[in-house]
Length: 176
Image 1 (spheres, rainbow, N blue to C red):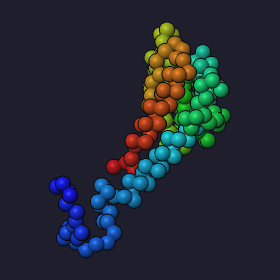
Image 2 (image 1 turned 180 degrees about the vertical axis):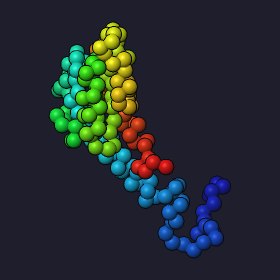
Image 3 (image 1 turned 45 degrees about the vertical axis):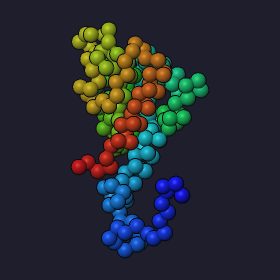
Image 4 (image 1 turned 180 degrees about the horizontal axis):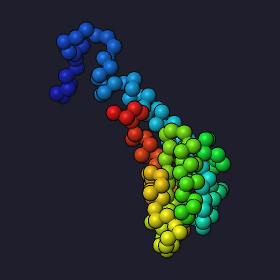
């Protein structure tokens, strides 16, 4: 047959024929699959909380509109209560007096929770470099993704949501 050899007997591996052992798939088939399924579910159904403070909030609303359709990435509805949200999008400048309110809302969100700092004001106070404005939101709450711009376009927010989804899919279910 031109150098092609046809085997009629099964390969000898030193073990009896039967089901494949679990460690043949890597770490552990059960926990790896559960990790992947739960992280896929978390990443595919992000529920953002409303926390728009300035002009960046207009662009955030534009990202939820029909032209950009943030719902196709799993962020279907902006939640008005932190108890139903797992993503806080801080859009705009945060005053010193608003800082404790921001922290309270963040603490009321259930775990796991993520934060996107949208715009130059939320990231580094932007052009409002004075005593009344918090110089960065990460001094109050931990930030996962920074979106640059003044104000950033809705496409930039969608890109941040996609990056956050990748980050969520890579997180282990149990911290080791």
